Amino acid sequence: MLASLLAVDRTRLTLLCETVTLVAGQVLGQPRGRMTHAYFPMGAVVSLSLGTAGKGDNLEVALVGREGMVGLPLLLGGTVSEVFATVTSPGQAMRIGAAALRAALSASPSLAQRLHRYLLVSLAQAAQSAVCTRHHRLDKRLARWLLMAGDRVRPSQLHATHESLSTRLGVRRAGITRAAAILQQGQLIAYRRGEMTLLDRKGLEAVACACYAADESSYRRLMRSKAVT
Image 1 (tube, rainbow, N blue to C red):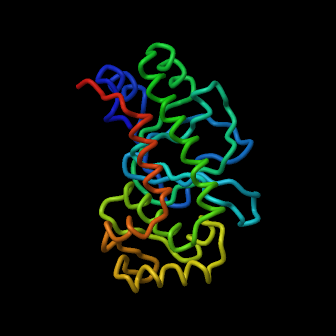
Image 2: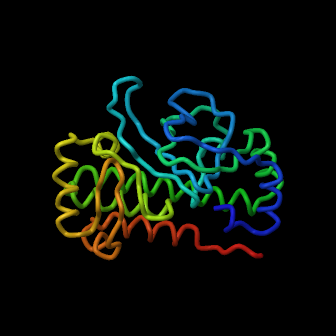
């Protein structure tokens, strides 16, 4: 996200940010919680989910990595989160205070336009996730999730237990075990002690439901303007 901004906007924004290290499990926001900062992940990955606090029934609606931003309500003048934002993969991020972000948006229409386009991307992807959850087979949904996570993490080795995946995809753990076995039998992934390695990305793309390609298409279409460096 930061690299795609106009050079002047990137400089303006980064001067207002601080670099922070996010750890796995860290909560950056929760429903009805006040938002004091926005985050631009550089190596970390953050899961956005909906559910009931303390019930363990959260359903993931989006993943945010270096392509995006956590704290979208701040772009519209909001100060309260409507989702749980939880770090799933540790790493660094650029953090900016809510007031500083509002000032930067007011000072630069091009920055505001760019970040608002990402807001549209997030809405499109959340809607796509709803369709995916309702209509697609679990092995295809798992392949989609692995591709999305792999896009945001380098190298393509993910820390993901069957338990955590069942929570994110809103299914029973036994279902994840069966779906992962299908992908392993196809030599698309390797799984050992909570670590998943993507062995055949092209193969995963062939197995994944059409939602993955739709997500990629919406991002390219809505974020089509290029930065001037």
